Image (cartoon, rainbow, N blue to C red; front, side, top):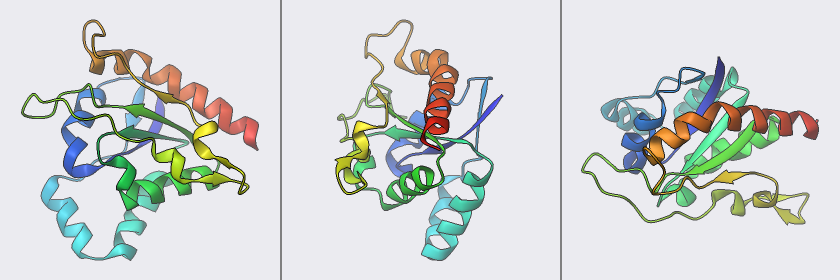
Length: 164
C-alpha cells in the first residue's frame, strides 16, 4: 500500500476528496473534520504548518487535488513547495468534474504548479504531471481516478527518484 498526502482546498473540495479516497492500494492521511480545521486555523500559522509537516512526514508522495480555488490556497502552495524541496513524488489531478455535496460540478482551476519556478528559469508546471479525468469517464470521473491513482503515485515517485 502506498502512503500519500492529499493537498486540496478544504472548503471547496473536501467532498470531492472523499470520493477518491476509496482506493485500497493508496492510503492518505487522516483528514480533519470541518470544525477541527477551522479551530486549527485559529491556532495560527505555526500550528497549521506543524500539523502539515507531521502529516507529510511519512508520505513519499503528494497528490494535489486541483479545484476552482486551489491555485490561491496558501496552504496548498506551502505543501507543494515542501513536497518539491523534500523530493517527494508530486502530481496533480483536476477535480472539477467531480460533484460536490450538492451534486454540482465546479470550474476548472488553474494549475498551482505554475506559481513556482525551478532554478529561476522555468515553471514547475513543466516538470509535474497533472491529470484531467474525463467528465464522461465510465462509470464516473471519481472511479476513473480510483482506478488510476496507484499507477499515478508510482510514476510520480519514480520521477522523484530521478531528481535525486
